Image 1 (cartoon, helix red, strand yellow):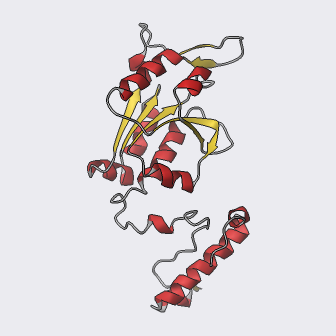
Image 2 (cartoon, one colour):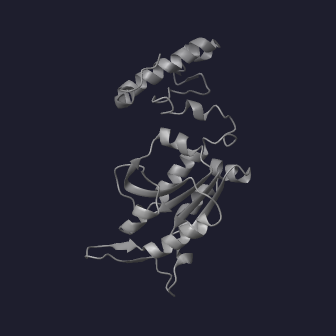
Image 3 (cartoon, helix red, strand yellow):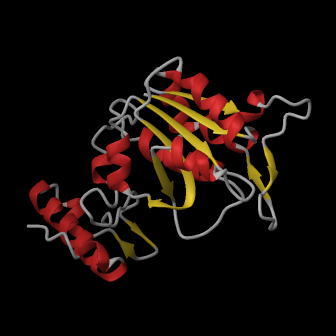
Length: 229
């Protein structure tokens, strides 16, 4: 997979990709992540990528020209499956979308900043808008990192145990069951006996029951369209 992330503040997003799972995925050659500095496509001496909004109002707006030049340049090198704009009023990101995007080959993610982008960018250059929640961040950089992390970890070969992602919360519209590790007893607090039994069928049944129980308690909305058998 190839992901190009367009931002006017590259240092805000470099760190998440320089360690742990995301770094290893790149080192293995499974994914390539490029952080594109939008200011490289500005044409004035100040490297401006924003300007005042027509009609007035507080805040600056990211201009269409450098964004168009950047996306056009990237598209001249490869064909993209999606050009995604991170926006608080976009489609709410979830595990289903992460699964879908993890099967794509090439993605562009545009990070908004200031008061957002010129609306013509959204009308003519973007194929999909994604939000990570009903709140506003200073920019789309952190949101782009969240989406990229959720996508990349699903790609085969990224995790050392490829079945791990399949048991994550939300994969089956269920929250993951409780997990335990050594010691089996600590301060009188014990690991459930079934997990120590070695009886895998009973363990799996316990996990399913606990996942349903936890989902019903914490996120009952997930069960409305999901009835595990």
